[in-house]
Image (tube, rainbow, N blue to C red):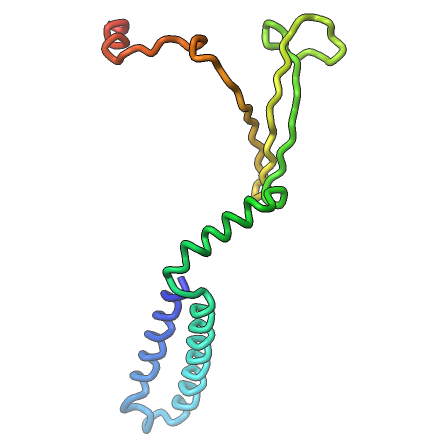
Length: 148
């Protein structure tokens, strides 16, 4: 992005410098205005060059990205907040009070609060299911035959 800005500033500077060629004697007052604009553009080009140089070489871009990932993982509480929520469900998947004595299953899941505009909340749960508890995989031909 800085490289594009720099290229645009240089192009604008070149246009301003070319515009005055041959017309400075006719428009003497314009020359002073153009000189001020040219000086301002040159200052912006220099500032842009310094910002571009502070970014380092393009080969360092991957290293900068890794550093950003490392900083996010080092302090995740600044980027997201995760809380644990426990619920007790009956056999009909209705939420029960903690005081309820009916048989039920406890479910634990996490709520991730992600700051931003707008802030978001996501629920997730880490589960383990035995392979034997899964339905057998069907082939697409079996599925097509079933639908016909």
